[in-house]
Length: 75
Image (cartoon, rainbow, N blue to C red; front, top):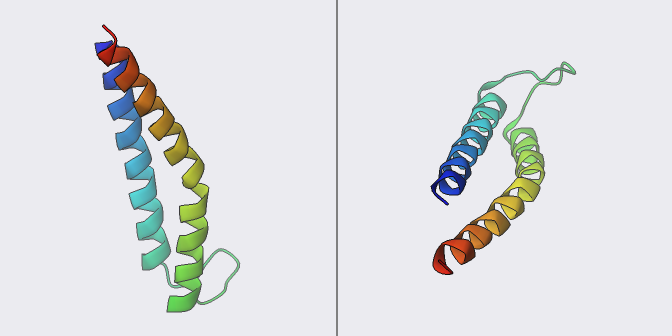
């Protein structure tokens, strides 16, 4: 049971760090890989795309949390 929680927290920390680094890269860069100068609107669109990409892992983490809570409560 404890290993499930440790792995859940570790995975959450990794996902959060990936999201934070991705967000920092989007907001710090001046020109993207295609050579387009980044305006605040383009940065916001890129951030929204990143956010949409992280919705699936968030859903998986919530399901995993519910399963961990149910298995911890039943013992």
